[in-house]
Length: 194
Image (cartoon, rainbow, N blue to C red; front, top):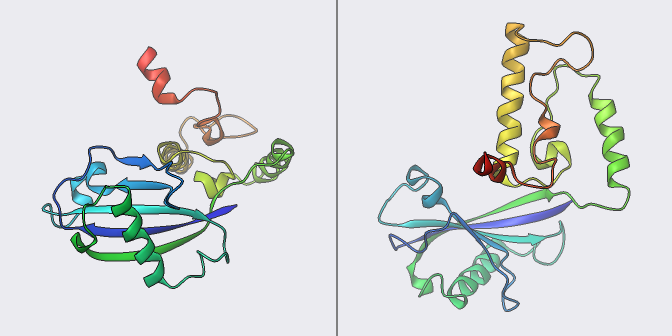
């Protein structure tokens, strides 16, 4: 699994861009994605006159970037966010925190389906276990799909607790968390077609 580092910054500016996130494809920077937390929900930012961004870097545990001091990582992030013209001046950044997330993204290999089948078969014996998200399911889901697996798991737990609509024998879960993001198109696109 690949890891990531997020540099969360507070920018003394009310609005920067309208998207929730932006993937960065410029070869001039190491920055991979920017989350705009206020655009997810205004309650994610304490001061509405400011904007909080999450600057995401994809790396490996113990590589040069991962082991760099937080101050150096912040300096690089601040320089890059100005270089790509999201923030006009580094002086507008009033606060930051660096968060290292080990094993954030699964890495697929040729035998991935075979290995996942073994894991799923083993996990199926536990009726009280609900794997969710990227890390729990060893699957690259986008955040919406990862959250949906968590919601399905919670519903399964409540249904089990209340003994509602349980299937006889086999898998007694009402919602199949493994079916989230299992097809070629996004669930959001399917809803738009209906």
